[in-house]
Image: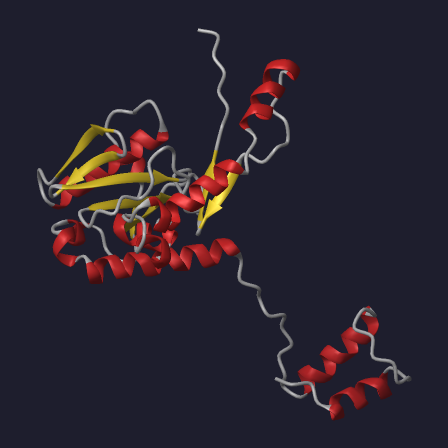
Length: 257
């Protein structure tokens, strides 16, 4: 509610001067008392964090996946709800402990799916495809906390309506949250319509090819390698560039094999 001139005047009177100073604790307390008397609740407006915005965005993507890819999802939509599914006490259904939390989570999702419909899910040993549910390939991205893990390695979101991602959060807790999102939706969002409409054209008209070339030309790999070999550490030269909403990052690995 708007703080009116009447309230400010009363505040100034009780403060015995006409100075409006919100940094003065005494005067701020007097203002709060006046507002409470008039039934006005003075609360600071909560700022939306990037993490919260990202979570809401991925919830929306999960709902759109259910809506737009219902035929491709098949039995997945009967197992995992939208926007997310909570799996209680996930460690109790993981079976034998695996070599990493990520692999444990993959097995948990398989076991959970098979508990809903026997034989519908299994593990995969393909790069970029971790599990198979009702014949659909799913890559699992897990996170210890409530932050969605969107760090990719060498493979980007595929433009494939039959591939999905399972974003799993809170693996350090007893219960985990699972969101199923279409790979194609992610692909389209992060690259953008302008790039997608031209990436199959020849190089002169291919915006994606142009941006990749511009990005690489702006990096100085020779200086990066020289610094590592001479000084024993990589210099502070830029090691990444952006294409749309995607950041391409390079990591230098040197081996003496």
